[in-house]
Length: 272
Image (cartoon, rainbow, N blue to C red; front, side, top):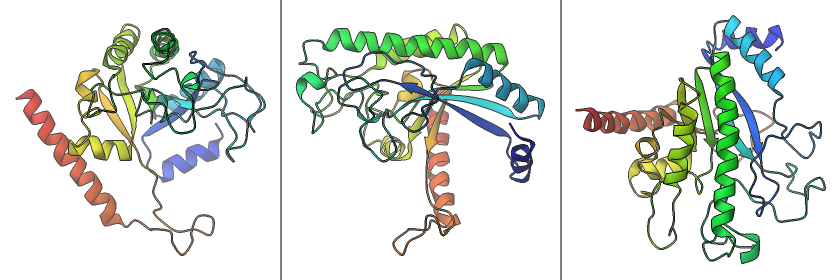
């Protein structure tokens, strides 16, 4: 990491730094979650080699920063949405779709083994979660070795990281698999275990309207549920148009005020 980056962190008064590491599945019928090391930056967001991760963590710790290692499934196609010629034939899936027990629009039943009526469903789901857990354990051991303060085991995978059912859409959930994942990680890692939730999912969960995510924190024994929030704070020539919504300071204050107020109530009721 270049010294200029540390100067930037200091100016911003940053105390924690997140290192993102991509997990990969080739397409909607691929049941193997894996790390992918490649120089094909056009078609992939590659996984970091272990040596690079160790170097970055050591550098950050030596400067006094706390480190989060965050893993999440990345989409296996170029940013422009065109076909990725490097992956095996098959229909790719967005990470927010993975785990959905109903076949999404645009997919056939044979292209969507998450559907419980697919004849390969049970074998597929078992293989997927086993490989996901194996990669999480691999990261957990590295985090323990390097003294990483927090490990995020997943990101923005709202169909996959569900611990309850609601309505007629959700006939299954993955509470058993998620608990098994966090329990397995805790065997090798003593730091904080987190999940990175999309802000839209969080807003539904925190309001209690969508109970499939409502208790993921306690159901799956997470220490922390992070929030993935991308909003325009200040317009620039690169991202500003006449229709761009510029969120004010009061918007963010109200958002987090609501969050912390509800979390305070939750914690009070849980630990009284």
